[in-house]
Image 1 (tube, rainbow, N blue to C red):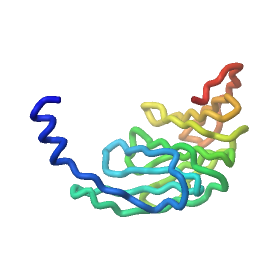
Image 2 (image 1 turned 45 degrees about the horizontal axis):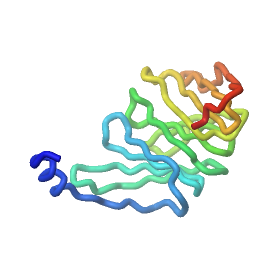
Image 3 (image 1 turned 60 degrees about the vertical axis):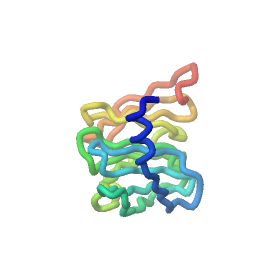
Length: 153
């Protein structure tokens, strides 16, 4: 490690954010790096607004009836995120209000989620090796594909 890197590392600080009551499954930064979201076995998503001093203001997003296994932020809008849950739903949220803006029911327990780079489509992977594509503009499923091999890891 270069001396400059070592000095930078020595100046780094850590901060622990608490709030979830059970194990955290997912962490993700929003597109402008000011919010950090987490999904947990406690059936909630939490969003921390991080300031320059790394102090955080927390918001709890409730609405799932099973674990929140993964979250993804809209790559084009820093206040919008989606959660994938074992309750067979994908929920879209507005981090400013803490309210779900949409909920889409899928065929299986959702464990992976990814937003397309243009913010128009959400892909969700299930424990049953099904990938579901959701049109974000209409909050409707546009395609579902079952794979004969594992796609959920």
